Image 1: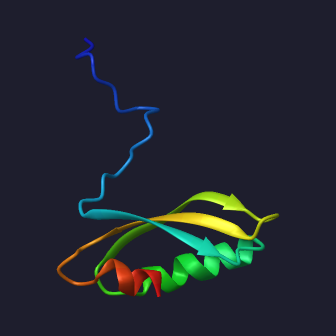
Image 2: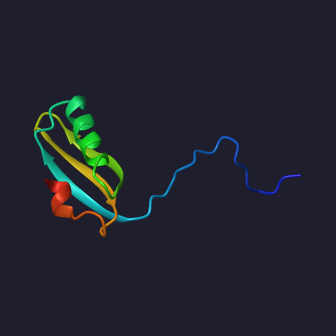
Length: 80
């Protein structure tokens, strides 16, 4: 009796609704820097999720993807 859809063993991914911004971040030297940026952005009202897409410690650079509510926060505020 298989219905064709199994939830056992499947990884659930939660889709977060909102506007997506990709922000270049300078000065990323280590994992601590990444956590600091993520934690700071998560505290901003209107931010729904924060995820680094690229981390280049050698060149001290990263790209963070932020999903946010544009009615509560502006991209320029996130960049600051």
